[in-house]
Image 1 (tube, rainbow, N blue to C red):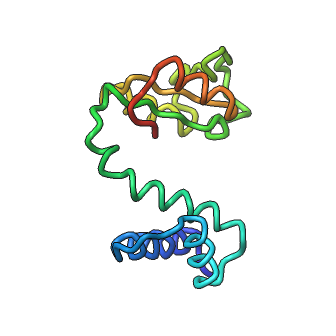
Image 2: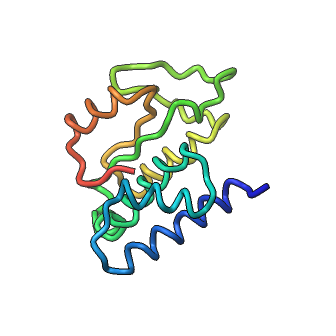
Image 3: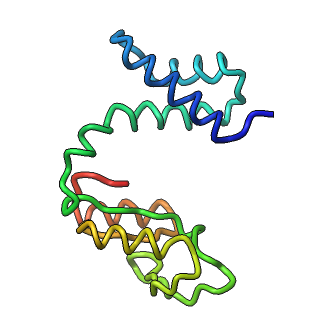
Length: 139
């Protein structure tokens, strides 16, 4: 059985090849074709579509100064058994206790000078944060 990392890498390679071909492509159609060619289930089509968008926006993202970026993290990265951080209108307010994967990511974003780093419980808060902080790039 192929490992998830191998599947993701194969998708990235196929997306890069499709973009590098220079032909006009429909991302939805191309995503379906790549998943089919790799023998993947339908659940990988959306992932492939996201990879197209990521690849196309990669250089613009890299050119965006850190102070114009925000980091959005899913709250499922927290240690749900030990996390004491409160939720506010801006998501989970990490206390940087070091008991989960969120702490080092928040610290790195702060160190780099990101406009903000947020731990989001769902999609609706994401739109609110983007409207409020108006970043030029989101990771």
